Image (cartoon, rainbow, N blue to C red; front, side, top):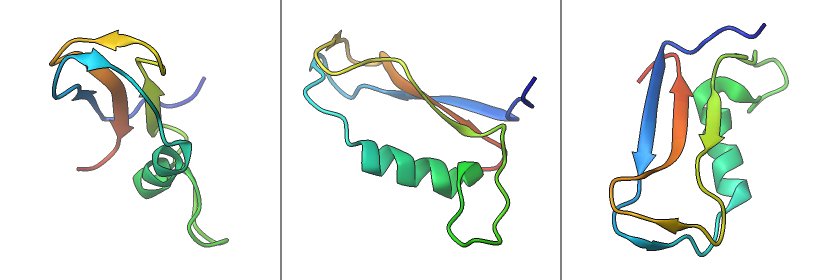
Length: 75
C-alpha cells in the first residue's frame, strides 16, 4: 500500500459548463512540484502525493464541483 498524503484538497470548477480540454503537461508539472516526480536526477519521489482527476474532457460540470483532488504533504 502507498502512504496517504497529509493534505487532500479539491480544485473546484469556477463556473458551470463543459470541460473542453485538459493539459496533461501542466498537470504533470504540477505533480512534480508536489513531489510526485523528479526535477533533478537526485530528487526523491514522494509516493503519497499527486493529482486525481474527478472529471474528464466532455463532462458537464457545475460551479463548485471538484475537477480534481490534490494530494500533498505540505502547502
